[in-house]
Length: 289
Image (cartoon, rainbow, N blue to C red; front, side, top):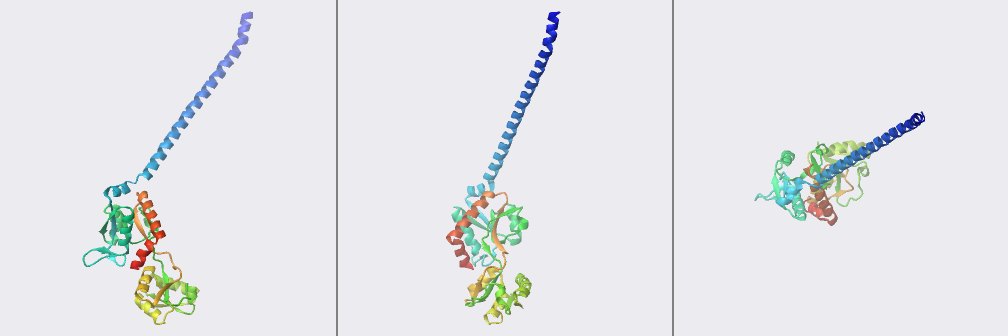
């Protein structure tokens, strides 16, 4: 009886010990499995990030350019002074110089591909050339399909006055005066919007050359023109000069390339930065504008 009582006294504790041991073992197993799962997740995440980094680092479009040793540039050679063909068919102009300078800095030969402006984006997607350099305005609606470089030229509207008339810097400085604009242009729309607030009145004329004559002969205190046209007017007539800061930020001219080519974008932007710092971008612009 004493043995039976002893057994009865010991067994409950033994059973309790066996149960606790099993719980600890199960908990340890669960922890081990969790650690394994976490390790596997970490490994998968590391692999995904490595693949993404490799995809960013590996730019197949740019690698093909380097293998060819040629940068193919699409442009519509019918828009002087940016690009046009001379009597022998050779392409020349601001964008031609820009393309050649970029190619020189990238140690690549430049191949110019003449394409109608309306087909430039389509031909870029088709792989006929690697970049578009063709007085190309930035278009936010296309940023899902192409990468745009930083701005190569600001073509925003500016004020043009008679040389030596240094007072006007902005529309508000033209109170009670006339501002000449080409009828039907974006600059006419801008002038109509500004005139009530700035105090000038708008003189609409048939052509930009008529606007320039109005400024020279005193019928208008200033004219408003896009940045490119204004530079050409100033270049062609020393009696005119651009004054003040641009009145708008559009159009801004840029370089376009495939959106799948981030390394090409980074390289082009780096060289454009260099060209701005050393003055070569301004020298190209001033040569043609």
